[in-house]
Amino acid sequence: MLPVDFLSGDYLGNASISRARLEARYLAQTGKPWDLMAWGFQQAQSNPVGHVHKPAVQLQQEAGVVLAQGGGFQVYYQPSRAGHFDDAHVRVMGEVGGFCRARESVSHKTETVPQIGVVMSRESLYQTTNRLFGGWGRAADPAVGWLDALVACQWSADVLPDWKLTRIAGEYPFIVLPDWPGTGERTIEVLLRYAEKGGKLLIAGARNASLAAAALQLKTVGEAREQAAYIGGGEVLGNHKGPWLDVEAGDWRVIERRFPALDSSRGGSPAALARAWGQGEVIVVPGPTGVIYAGTHAPAIRDFVRRLIAPRFKPLVEVEAPPTIEVALRRKGGRLLVHLLNCTGMQVAGEWAAIDYVPSVGPVRLRFAGAAPRRVELLPEGRVLTAPYQVERLEIHAVVSVQSSR
Image 1 (tube, rainbow, N blue to C red):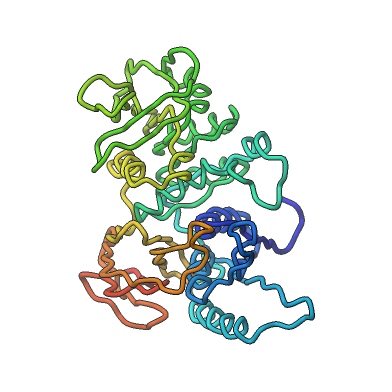
Image 2 (cartoon, rainbow, N blue to C red):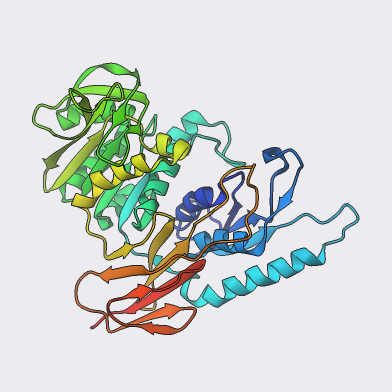
């Protein structure tokens, strides 16, 4: 880590919430104070007319993603060439500022509650992008997709930098290694030791499966190749087309199958395999998942992820809500803080550059592991919640503050 006192950055492009999720979670792992900057407008390159300014609710939705990870939030605007800053933008920033200040005491400088970790591979980024700043293009899609899928399952997830894995892996009950193209043997070794000591590890991607095959005693068949792949088990078949590595199950248990055509009634090849590994367990998906979900956000892919993880992971807080609700578990001052963010209707394309309406969602139901809490409060509203615990209407962002029974 460079000897700096503060980290600051911004996130660009369409689907800003999806990008902010990744960058906020990465900065939160650095151990430095940090903030992220939203752009108050969509970029000129994303539509035929130029800058399209964001209403307050859109910026509040983006702010919630950053606040939930303990960072500061700012917004970038451009004045006119004459230096004039329009009153409309001042009013919008007043609304956004009030939104952030109301949540500051339960958002700023909080600490994560380790649940699911998503490995961020600097090795892969260095191999696939030629710049550190200004956006990574599609190079970060393996992590973006996995993170979005986990969030859509209402699981709290962190980004784990590969340079920090040896220090923090053991804190997480479940870790996902996304389908990076160049993870490196060192990261594989660290993660397999984590599984041996009792962790649940999911290794995704043809390259990662091939890299780990010898250590895992998993027999591969030929080289990875582009294949049509459809996975059943949900409402519809999930299209997983991409590079897959063919494997023979051997001592591994096949838990999901893929099919080369729209016919899941027969045959099929392993799409996911599992086996005990020391005191823990390893799941291998020898094909793309993060990249596919980042590019499609298809519910069938999300459901595939849920089927792989749900039987193996018991969250500290179970949240029952639509897939557009993001959950982040944090701690501050001895309290457990359950951040709930309503991402319904979030902006995802240049053709739909701005939103001024976020429909409320509810009820959002919560169940806490272990002994019943001593006090549960909904903030910033300040209302005490009693069992069964639920938020009747979630507008954009709220925090459920939990004091333990001890």
